[in-house]
Image (cartoon, rainbow, N blue to C red; front, side, top):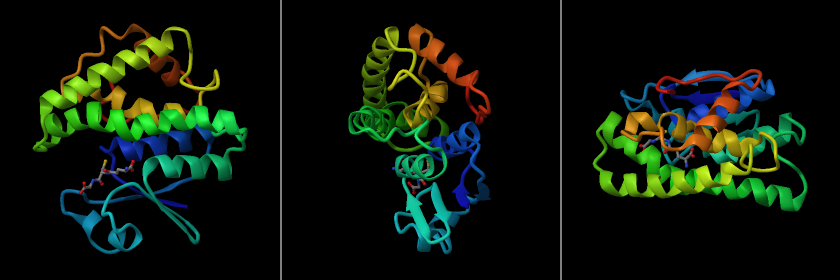
Length: 198
Ligand SMILES: N[C@@H](CCC(=O)N[C@@H](CS)C(=O)NCC(=O)O)C(=O)O
């Protein structure tokens, strides 16, 4: 199974993190992003969006980090990381949506501006970040984990761009519960980091 990968991408890190935590074997295929290889064959043939990550597992080809997390956890990790009960799936899914919405437009986009020079409205990214970090911190005040009372793919989806938020000029010091949650994630067996994680 191959992951078309970029080391500095939080979206790719979500997949690498689940694979490491759940003991799933992945062959990384590093893509030269600066050279634009994600817009050329073979990546563009696998994902017309021209985005990473892309997972290839035999005949299964998937784009989008959240979708890949669901697939990998379902196919290779039993129900530990992606539960099978409908209400539990809904619980986890709420957080996958947060990852592709508020976290994407907040901390991820703030980092795109500061680290990669993207032309986005930095003030808006910070406003979105403040709101979502506040909500997550509040949730974690009475919950050790985002969903199900245990680590799930919700952690793999939401943690990466919070962990590198400092690269977008976001100070996580005020978010005590988030800091404790990040420490719990770092202590999980098999945990791996990525460049920029505080
Ligand atoms: N929704 C996608 C977003 C993927 C994405 O935006 N990937 C970035 C790297 S982190 C990318 O490849 N961007 C290429 C581009 O925007 O041209 C996911 O969650 O995987």
